[in-house]
Image (cartoon, rainbow, N blue to C red; front, side):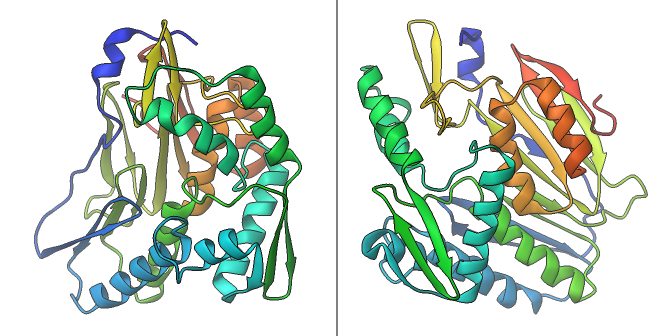
Length: 313
């Protein structure tokens, strides 16, 4: 899929800018999920930060498939089966549901493709994988599955789990529930700005959300915003863009769109949706919106091509 070369110089949508009354603002930043998680609480007690930090640290540990050998995801990938914490089992069940409703476009057992494409979009390597290598990776994914029995999980097949398409949204969902349960109304939390939760901002309209690179904006509050974009990790080879957004059904790393923005009640669902919709046509996206009650923006060739979100500006 050909793109305008100038767009490659633009950063990924760490893109969200916010406005809010800064009186009594308390900010804490934590490094997790290979990014900075920024927590902004307005007119709230700082005691909540210890609970929020614990959720971030524990979720990052649970879903780390590379370095934390005591984490659930790491152990499952290494041992292929075992008994795990109830939160981890619940998340895997949810991911299985997302695989079903996406027709396979969301699949946490995507490791064979990720390992194949990683050297392309994360370095200067410009040697594309062969069709045979891509087909082999797709076959490994399609022949792999997850089985759940009580608190026991098992991977059948050669693939391993990857939670990059849902981990940050899942963590923000836990934080969002905690803040609401404790009566905190004015807040925003972003995980690298690709996943954001917004409470109230102190104004009736809510936060002003600007989508950088496209000069579009909208107002939002008491919701979550998620994005997927080819600008985060990508490589141009012979006029085509190859990105980190992979299609587990075809093996392609060239999604249909440049960027998807999703506004959804559930941050985990929004996080997954933003990835799923990158490989859906606009007509299919509209059908998903009607069925699953969310809003979205679609960007192609440097401009907004579809929006059901607020005032796109």
